[in-house]
Amino acid sequence: MRTTLAVCVVAFGLLLGAGPAVAHHAFTAEFDASKPLKMTGTVTKFEWTNPHAWFYIDVKDDSGTVTNWGFEMNSPNMLLRNGWTRNSLKPGDVISVEAFGARDGSHIGNAKAVTMTSTGQKLLAAPAQN
Amino acid sequence: MGFLAGAAKRLQFPVIAVAMMFVMAGAARAQWLSLPLPGTPRTPDGKPNLTAPTPRTADGKPDLSGIWHADENVENIAAEGVDVPMLPSAAALYKQRQATLGQDKPQLHCLPHGVPDAMLVANLPFKFIQTPRETVILYEEFNQYRQIFTDGRKLPEDPNPAWFGYSVAKWEGDTFVVDVAGFKEGTWLDNAGHPHTEALHITERYRRPNFGNLELEVTVDDPQAYSKPWKSRMIHFKLFPDTEMLEHLCENEKDAQHLGFK
Image 1: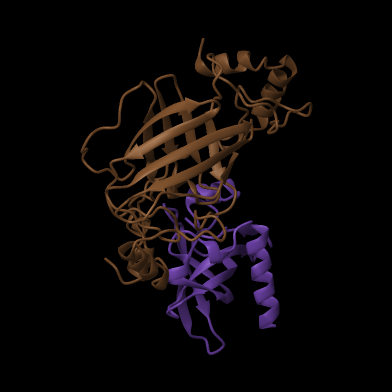
Image 2: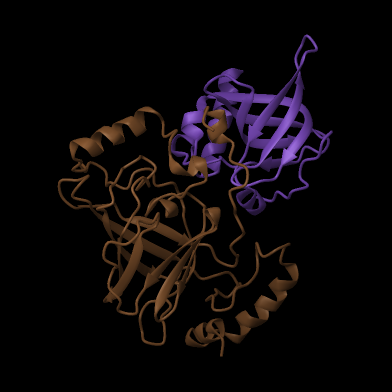
């Protein structure tokens, strides 16, 4: 199952034409391309700011514990060119996220794609590579 | 007559394409992410013809104007298999930057990428505006710019060091040859971390082989970092047709704080 996810995430990188291994900004220092993440949660905050947009979600684990995760995306400009707007995510939206995890294991990730649970709409986040 | 109208005339812009523009303009999305730019040669279906001939200015020189981007990240400007002639001090700094996964690169603190690194991030646009006396490069990231003077002036002597240096250029045939010097130490030549000192002198050679492509070859000459001048690989840029630049100010850099910096 984990392998499948990893394969999917790698395929995404190829699809977007730029793998994380050649990422330009802090990716290699901050995130680990060998740590794919996939989780579902409720949006608590969306920061539409350069050089990277960030969103935060509350994720409940099997025991009912809620953890707030933060996800970095590309710049709002690159997201605009990928079909996003500043209103694409709102607090309360339930979404699933595909991402790469942090090297230090903290609760942040570098988002590859976001799927809106209510509609199934998928938005590519594009690697945060600048 | 405006600059763009002049360009359209030079290209003998077909009437049908003009009509197509108005049709497309109705469907243009919010902002200026997608809009038909005058002066763009088009195929019969109205799409930009990226293999059309190189546009030229009134004096017959290639016109490099347009919005460009690297279509993939150029991590390391050295050509495959080339041993960059680093002096020991440069080699040590390069090794340290590689070992720390680039966590001290300037852009993590909202400071500029170097020359040519500012153009080497995939899909990050930059705009050439070519006029007779100067060519301006607008870099979308962090709203930065360079002025490349073609009015015959010489490079300044002992200038105040600058992140993007000081640039003058001349044409050698269809190649736009830019001399850049007067750099502040600390920029990275590329994402791999090739370093330089204030003694850096860069020569950029730009060619626009057709409407949709721009090529760059860089010569790096820094006698305090490298034992001899060395040439980069050929770097390829693609035109971003029918779109516009967007503001990009560094307002919320968090990578540095996640990495433990202030």
